[in-house]
Image (cartoon, rainbow over all chains, first blue to last red; front, side, top):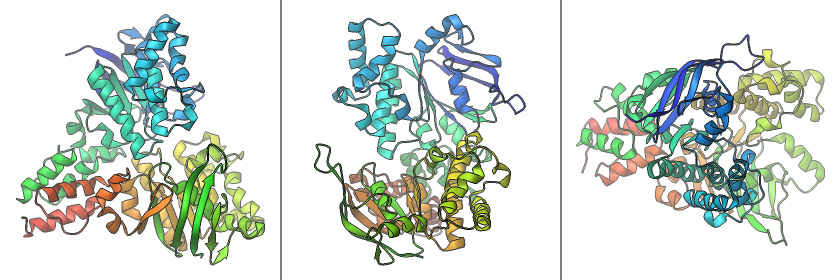
Length: 280
Length: 287
């Protein structure tokens, strides 16, 4: 087994001023393997965004620990190294644009890291090519579509050359086209460039190709497995206020009617084949 | 309850400038009272520009918007009054909460209608009931609420005007599945209770397939398809050609057809395909 780049060990967390409320994270634990594509699911308020902010030290645990490539996020001397290792992309692309030209925006982080300017040039071009936005390098970010802006935000993170990128609902504000662009970009970064991806999402369909799926509820990780394993437990997910992809929902409803369908057909093709077999 | 009609509605942004762009061109739509219409189209197709014409927020570059046969832009007063008849809920309406308390925020619309105090109070309670905002939140600051609660308060603020037409631009964007289902239920409940027309803009084909009775598809500033969900989703190839998705269920049904399993009718919800498969199994034929 490959080494875990992210280790979250029994983490509890409360926001300041909320001492009387139940903790947002309440003993959450998970490990993410380097180079894998991991998805974290959970309803609003399950603690998944709070967990995401623990993964590069924006927040630090009240109890328990978060280790990034072995570095404890509470060790302030390692904070810069941690942020170089794990980059973050948030939901709203408009809040993440700082410059008035795309390539300046992508250069912002490496500039702050003190990277020499010739090196920045190389990294910016490379990052924009990786997200397929190189042709837009001289454009103004505010004239781009949501999906394009989000890919520029990802390029800004890539320019730091992180080993892991955490994306907190990066497609929530995008239309289907933008959603496809962003998801195919991050899958490619994972599969072809070996960057570890942690995707936090409400869209069950985005989890279908993940290596590992984690389900959060009430500040804990309550389920973990391959997409097939996780989405075959339809009742458990529904109890957590989540749904399953429509493919799994259809086969589940057919099973409820007494038909013998597999619980782990997730893609359209697998689902169609399963029905075809049953009917012919 | 009003009927809505647009005649040759055209809207051009930044006319006579280098950034001139035609957002709507010659759009003719009629929506009868009580209809539940879904508007679909990819970003930039003109659907949001269209809905902003319905209550006079945008003025047509040419063409007319008629409510009950009256051009809403013919006088300033008519345009002003239209804002109370046609309630528009924007994308991410929670960013537009501004009052000190939830109660005052919901009251903003009815107060502008110059209603008596008692009636405003009654409407606030009624609107909160529709969207599931408990009265215990009335004295809180909107800023203290969760994202889902904020959105409900914002929708309540529009419903409190008792609009005969409720227009919602992506009301479920960014919510979790449970939040989506519950907001959509609030909307259908409001319609059932009041007979209001509902116009829903959505990117989620699954949502829209489930609840709308009529779909209008926008592409490049034109309306390119108009019909029942069944009509529209049976033309999956055409939808894909203009960059739209079809519901996953429709994809499965298309693939089954390629495999030689003929699914009777067009399926766009999980329940329809489930029933179709069940009926085929009970002695239907394959080929």
